[in-house]
Length: 298
Image 1 (tube, rainbow, N blue to C red):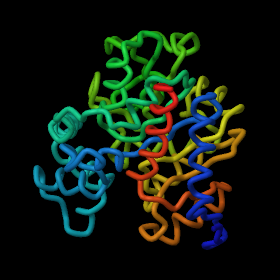
Image 2 (cartoon, helix red, strand yellow):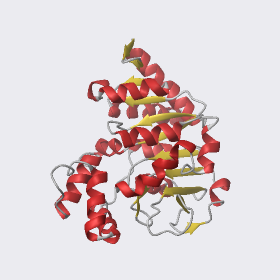
Image 3 (cartoon, rainbow, N blue to C red):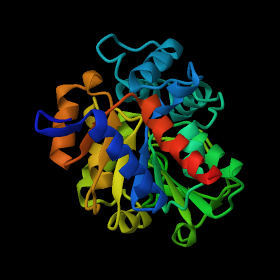
C-alpha cells in the first residue's frame, strides 16, 4: 500500500518490502549511498554510547551543568562548556562519552563487504571504521568533518587511512570506498563538530557547498541515497542531510517507522523527494542482509 503523509510518499506492506529489495540491489550495484544514523546501534541491545543529540546533551550536562533553557540542546550545551571551560575540556568530555567501542551492526558489517564507493556515517562512534577493518579491507579512506577552532588555514575536513594515520586529501580520490563522517568521530583522532561555534562558518558556507568534500560531490552525481537509522527532528540534522544529498542523481529512500516521525521530518522527506519505507528498522535490516546471505550460500 502507498499512502501520502504531508505530501511525502510513504510505502507500507508489500510495496515497502519490494522497495527494500530495490534498495538491496541498488547497494550491491553501487547505485545507492548508505546514509547511516545512530539508531542502528539499538539493533544490538542497549547502546554503550548516546544515540540522540538530546542524550549527548544530558551526558555533557552531567559533567558540566548548563542553564535549564539550553540543557536539552547538544550544540548549545557544548558551546557553554567550550566558553566556560575551554575547547580541550569539551573534546575530553566527548571522548569520554564516546569511549566505549561500538560493535558494527549486522547492516554495517554487510555494507563493509560491498563495493560501495561512498558511505556516509553521521554519528561520533567508530563502528563503520571497525566494520571496514574487520572485513580485511585496505582500500578505503575516511574523511571527517573537523572544527576550524584553533586552525589558521582554510580547512573543513581531514583524511585518515585504515590505520588511523592522517593522509593527504588526494588519497580519497584513489580509494575504492570513502567513509564520510561529516560531524567527525571519536576515532581515530577525536574530531568533534558539536558546539554551536563549530557550525557557524560551516552553515555560512554550506549552501555553496564549500564544507562538502570534493570526492563526495563527485560520487553523489550518479547515485541516490538510502537513509537508515537516522532521525531528522532537529534543523541542524536536516540541514546537513539536505546539503550532502544535494545534486545527487537519486532516487533516495528513507527507512523509518512513520508513527515516530515529526511533521517536520515528513515535510523534509517530501521536500527532497525521498520515498519513505514505513518499516521497523530491525525488519528492514533482516530483509536486506538475510536475502544477501541466502544468495551467497546458493
